Length: 236
Image (cartoon, rainbow, N blue to C red; front, top):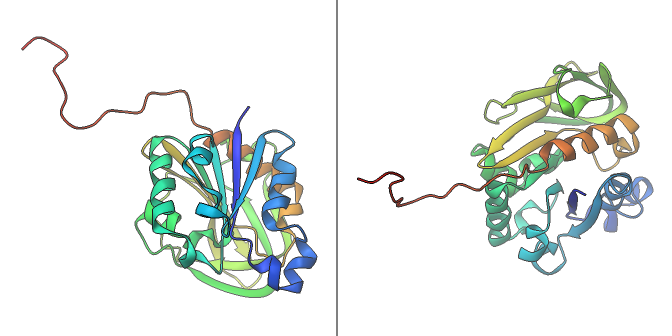
């Protein structure tokens, strides 16, 4: 069984009625609701002690799903470093929507991770440009969302290891909306949909992508490399 922790800052849902209407129990609970169909799932939020990401929680997490937006700066640098180290050791990380500006994603990418954006209730067509990849299994040629926040290029990230989706928006912009990266022993997937006032996480194709990504990000049974001074394998 894959052990998943869904992390959400859980701020919008407490103060914004429009968000409460879409995600009355919080974005994390909606994500957890469909992930629980296949995985062992726990949730964690910003205002819990250690943001809910204690060493014990992370040591027992195979894949961490991350959603954040208005409180990136409130995430402790100590916890960011803790998560960063677990990714290098092999824990999978799925970063959703505005999590592109989270401390953990920026620290792993080493760039600003900035982009163009616009909230205008635009159609978003998410094109599958890597149809043999496990993350898109069963998804089809594209996902069409009636409304989604526009994210546009240039997206200031390193060149992805694999480009999975390219998004098109009614206003004309395109965006690398699904990208994979490897850092140390860990696998990372960034996926664009998920603006807090749109029901993107109720879309079955979006849900399938996230489920597939959990399976892809799940660490393989491998040995973490040793570093530093090393004794010779052969007699010198």
